[in-house]
Amino acid sequence: MLTDYLKKLIDRQAEKDSDFKSLLSKPNKSLKELAEYVTGEAFKAVKDAPTDEARGCRTCYQDDETMLNHIIHYYQEDDVKPEPLPENVSAERPSEPKPSEPKTVVMKPKRVKKETKNPKYQELSLF
Image 1 (spheres, rainbow, N blue to C red):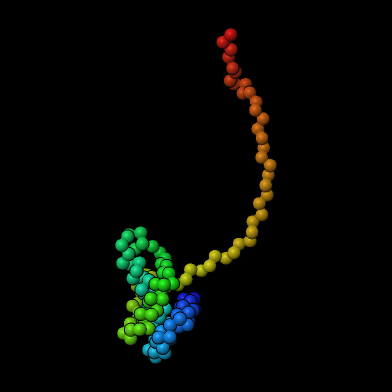
Image 2 (cartoon, rainbow, N blue to C red; image 1 turned 60 degrees about the vertical axis):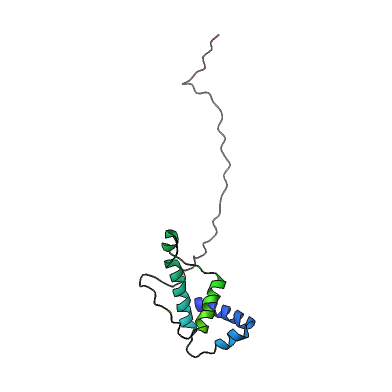
C-alpha cells in the first residue's frame, strides 16, 4: 500500500535529517493526505509530459528521490493541499497476478523423415 511505502521513506529521511524529523510533528499534516498529494503530483507529471506516449499511458512511476522531494515539500509548506484526481483516474495498485501451478512439459523425440524419391518426379538422364 502506498501509505506504508511513504512511511518507510519518511522514516528513512527522518533518520538522516533532524530538521525533517521536526517537521513531522505538524498537526495539519497526515499520511493519508500525503498519499493523495504524491498521487496527484505523479498524475500531473504524466498529464504535462512532453510526449504523446507519456500522456496516453495507463500507469505512472516515480522514483524514490522524486517521491522524497514531494514528501519534503508537503511537510515544509503549510498551504500544500492535494488536488483531486479526475473521475476517470484511479490511484490503486494493480492486483498481483496469482501464481499458477508449474506446467510439466513432456519432451517427445523428433521424428526424422526418411528421404525418399518422389515417384511423380523422375530425374532424366541426358546421356
